[in-house]
Amino acid sequence: MATPRVAAGALFFDEAGRVLIVKPTYKEGWEIPGGYVEPGESPRAACIREVQEELGLSVAIGSHLVVDWAPAPSEGDKILFIFDGGILITETLTQIKFRDGELAEWRFVGHEDLEIHMPARLSRRIRTAIEARKCGAPAYAENGNRPPLV
Image 1: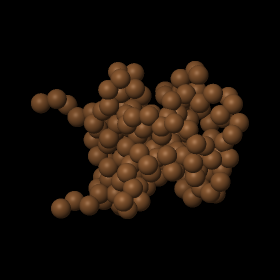
Image 2: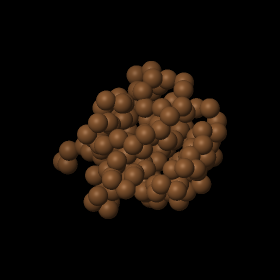
Image 3: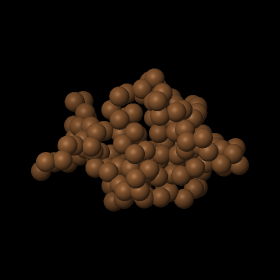
Image 4: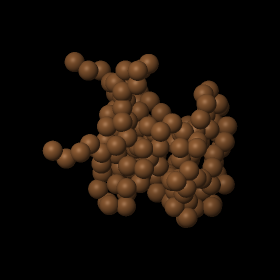
């Protein structure tokens, strides 16, 4: 029986449609806010907790946008959720505080620039989530891509 690691993140946008990314202090590259689900915790609850811990924000988190099966050679099977964090207005952005020391910086980037900042597998997952948000329907992905219909 598979015992995948489960993680959840939030996809936030600015008013121009750019994506919020964060720079972890403990590894290279950028990510979206989020982290691993703890035992007995739902993916959505983990997303809310991680946003509060990492950014110091208590904001409404919407429905899931994508569930991605994304095994990693060094970590095994993973199931990764991205939830809709909506648009962050300027007033909310001024409230961002790095409380747990895991993050050093945040910025907004256009979806066309995601690969500059992060691994391809994460940028694919984020693009799939953006597409799902535009369509108004959640997506299932494998390694960040929707599988072909059979």
